[in-house]
Image (cartoon, rainbow, N blue to C red; front, top):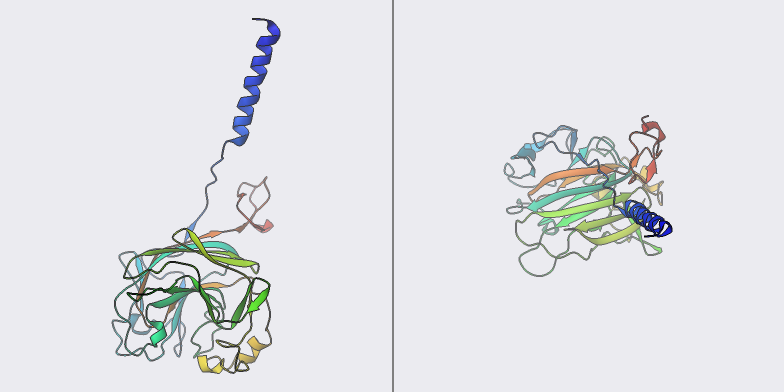
Length: 302
């Protein structure tokens, strides 16, 4: 074999090898953090309507077998004891994933629309900033609905207490907007996720499928309805701070707290995990991650 032919083959094989290395997929470890330790409610704050902060009224929230349970076993009647369990730290850009299941029957006194109804509040105000009698925090709700045994009933809808979202190019003041999810009957576990991109957009996923996406979460539109001159704020326990929120009409929500909802039907949660998408984006830093979308230079480690 001639020398130039040998050299040609060597160079060809070298180029193929280099190209293979370039196209080889590099595995990036995602640093998911568990928000629930499976043992107790450490890191979470409780707020019931009409109760002081961190009073766990009738032991509604408790942990059993590594499951965070919302139960009404000790209730005679619901009596509008709406409650939320707030994680201690606010976030802006992140992914959230969790498993949930509805169990048993709704407690007596709960509203008919709260049968197999719960949710996770995103970009929420803090527990401490709620009015004393406030039913729901101003937030964007990833609404969780269970099937009623027959018919269709989507889950991972969006509801908007004191807020609104943009669908297409228009601010949509509809209080609850349905997703395209399937219906999940019975007491089965369902896996759901939220992709939260600050004040840009949110997307909801169920069992791996994107079922809803909307843009520009914002304050406004009345507390539940935009059709009654916003006078419904006091109807849901927001009296002292009503004007505070009205003055923020149209303000984009860019960050906030995550809260689990309790509104009369028992529900279980497990595997509550978060992937923070805000971090050091300097490629020279030891803690750089290619999946970060918001830069936090103060977090950089060298």
